[in-house]
Amino acid sequence: MNIQQFIHTLKENNSQINVKINEPMKNHTSFKIGGNADVFITVNNTEELKNVITLANENCISLKLFGNGTNILVKDNGIRGIVLKLNMQNIEINKKEEEKEYIVKVQAGMPLGKLAQMLLKNKIGGFEFASGIPGTIGGAIKMNAGAYGGEFKDIVEEVECLDEKNNIIILTNSECQFSYRHSIFSDNKLVIISCKLKLYEDTEENIKRKMNENFQNRKEKQPIEYPSAGSTFKRGENYITAKLIDECGLKGYTIGGAQVSEKHAGFIINKGNATAKDIIDLIEYVKKVVYEKTGNDIKLEIEIIGE
Image (cartoon, rainbow, N blue to C red; front, side, top):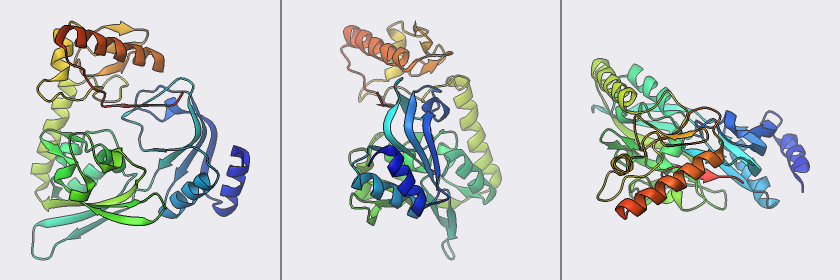
């Protein structure tokens, strides 16, 4: 089955599903970079998700899951096969009787900023650390995203996902194997559908104050005015990567439209019309210089995909 036959069969069973052909991935990544995806499909519920995965697997068509594209660099020649964007955003808020705790069930496609505002409105605290992270719940759980002293491992109670046979399974917090910017979902083909977050009652004033403090901190210290994929490199076990890059004199170093941020050396930014090759060449240069000068082999936090 070729791509056109795949789309025809999919549409027969899912008439409302959103399918785009030769879709520019620069429109779907925070880097604003990337060639075209052969097929870009947006799913809004679990049934659509399962149908696309089943049909792709049966016909050996490559499939890449996508959230908000905030931790990803897509190469200049794009992505062969299917990019599947999860747009499921349902939320259920349940308060434990006679307690000040909430269990919030939220689907994988929910943007973190949108969820933070909904929780603020309902006076639910514990999510403030994630309010400024530009991603979705699914991606945040996959990489155990964190900021300002909090990580998703601290608030996830359980995760609902599809296994490799497309069966729905539930994993507890410990079964998710959370570690620094890593989880069980980083290493296998489990597809996150939703999760339950354990949060708590708080005042709107307290929640808003914490969110504003985090936003101001991010605005002052990070180059949020330029397209990027967030922090490019992981923190080292016994060193701060951004500090090493800065000490190596690489702040502001530029290749094409890609630059090591002058505000925060841990970020590589798109200064304007950067290609994926510019970003990759700059990453390799930074890694080479840091290794030569410090002996540390710094690791990527972002994911590079495509051709």
